[in-house]
Amino acid sequence: MPEVEEKLEAYEVKREGEAEILMLKTNAVFFNPVQVHNRDMSIAVLRTFVAKRKEEHEEMINKRNKSRQHVSQDILPRSDGDGTSSEQPASSILDGKINDDHGKELHRTVDKEEGLSTEATHTPSWKRIRELNAPVVLEALAASGLRSLRYAREIDGLGKVIALDNDEASVEACKRNIKFNGSAASDKVEAHLADARVYMLTHPEEFDVVDLDPYGSPAIFLDSAVQAVADGGLLMCTATDMAVLCGANGEVCYSKYRSYPVKGKYCHEMALRILLACIESHANRYKRFIVPVLSVSMDFYVRVFVRVFTSASEIKNAPLKLSYVYQCVGCDSFHLQCLGRTVTKGKSVKYAPGIGPVVPQVCSDCGKKFNVGGPIWSAPIHDQDWVLSTLADVKAMKDRYPAYNKITSVLTTVSEST
Image (cartoon, rainbow, N blue to C red; front, side, top):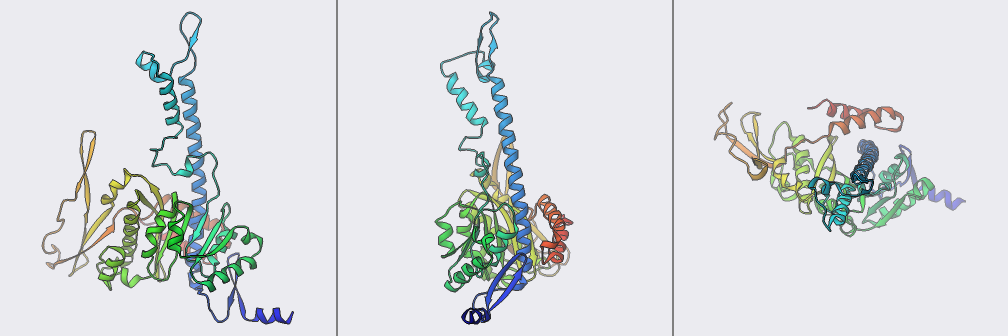
């Protein structure tokens, strides 16, 4: 017993939400209490994702059932006028003829109606199955494991939570904290010693949620992260290198994010849009694209929440969502130059380069020249339906959010933006 007491004296119990962790008083494993805002916001959005995912799945099942009923009605026996009946697919009835291949055509029609075609790229893979499995979460940079523990203990309907770290001390601390939180955590959370980039690359599209919360830039993790997220899944990503993203070191920003920042009063929003453009760029390489649901600037970092989908045709629209920025050096005037455009002729849609420049040589307001930055994400950075759902959920569960005041203020501000 004295030995146990001596060991416990070396630790300090930290509680956040419903999770508790044992932290060495020497602070050998990184823990930032200020990030409670980040963790609370992530839990709120993740709860919305679980609910939306279930709603989308139920909607898909209902559509499939209606399609089956429609197909069944099309192939019901019809009378030939002499008391006998025969069966014909709808296509044969419309054509007024029957051939030897009508059975094959019917089979193809049913397959198409049931959504079994492999070309249904806009439909996430988890929507094309009748049974909806519990979402699997990957925390790529777990440290003490507090975030993973909170996910497992506080969010209903989650499956496994995989916590990764490439530091042995962190993984040991994570495993210790999993045991400390009892069966509610040990039944769901797994800790692994691994390089997050390699682990995500070797587990493509296996995780419904991938959480990246690095110290600094997430750029080196993005290529593997967009491959690890399941179709229709959620990628949550933090960037803390705000000086770089806001224009203090433009050349460094370009080397990491392939976008050049310009200085302006909107620098924090530009940081969000640079990060979104970078994620989209990585996703496009694998015939995938992103749909932002929430993008926030909080404390000393930016954090984005995006859905990741697969569609070879949709990525053609990527240039329409990106723009260069012309920022006047003498005043606050700025203009956006879209990278691409569409040309419609009849029913055909062709893609073409954007037409420019959108500004004269000097600013019409002050006569000064322009700096050029970008490309940045110029499409919407929020989904207002998601934001309102998340805000309503947070207000309904006020007692479960330690940083309630902070995250409600941020969500309210976003919900009122246009």
